Every structure is written in C-alpha cells, then in structure tokens.
Length: 121
Image (cartoon, rainbow, N blue to C red):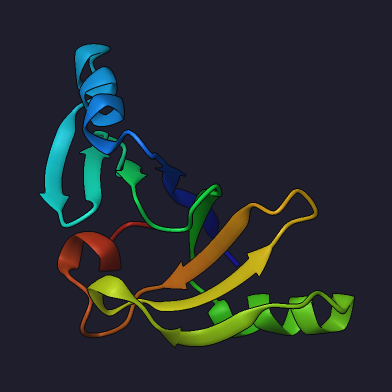
C-alpha cells in the first residue's frame, strides 16, 4: 500500500493575515475558495489556510488502497469516520489522533482530476 502526504491544513481565526504571511515567506499560492487558500508545491502536496475544523491541524494522506487502510484501522481498534465522498472525487476516511489532530486518508476515484489520479505515481 502506498501512503504519501497530500496536504496540511491549518485553521486560522485571522484568515487573510495568516494567508498573507505564507505568501510573504514564499509559499507558492495555488488557488482560493470560500474559507480556504491553497498553496501548491511542485512535488504535489498542498499547504492550506482555512476556517474549517476550528482549532485543529489537519494532515491528509493519499493512498492507493483505502480498503486495506480501513481494514488495518479496524484490526487495531482505531475509531474513524467514513469512507465517504470528499472533494475532488476523493474517497476519504478521517481519524482523530490522541492530540485532537484530524488525519484524513484519501483515495482517488474515476471522477478525480488527472493530477489527483496521478499523485502517487
């Protein structure tokens, strides 16, 4: 099973100021949606500033075997949510680590854009 970091998302009460800080230190700005600014790096991972998931850090990984990942979570007795459909045609499971950080694991589907489908290649 392949597992690669896909994105890191931080919550910010000072959304515009925090986003501007990351622009100023040279993070490569990608795009913006409501309550989300995405900085896209050449290796394919994203760093996001958002108003989602108040007070939490969210780290997302991409896998080529979500079913196997879920099976391992069940075997280890680790609570999780999903799998369910997420953004960009992804299937997603979410778990919370002991420090209350959100860990998401995604798998691309046929409806995902080519850049997401090819992320693990």
